[in-house]
Amino acid sequence: MRLCFPREAAMPYVNIRITREGATAEQKARLIQGATQLLVDVLGKNPQTTVVTIDEVDTDNWGIGGETITARRKQGK
Image: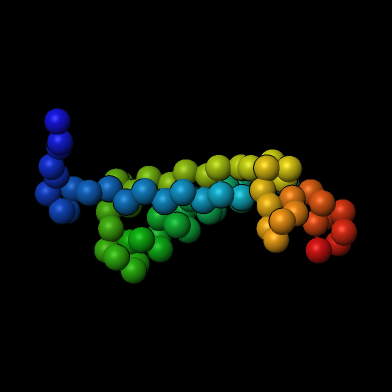
């Protein structure tokens, strides 16, 4: 079964991924507010239907250039 919604009813979904390194509840709230406002300002989206999620990833589970973030932090990168 496929549900169809009018274009204006489509809710934007934003997923923010950050490393788990101590972002405070206030900082996360600001990210959610800021991402929502960006969609309002740029695309005219309804803030009441905008969904923002934040995924916090352990630094051992995130890698760049073949190294984990944990290893990079230890090396001062």
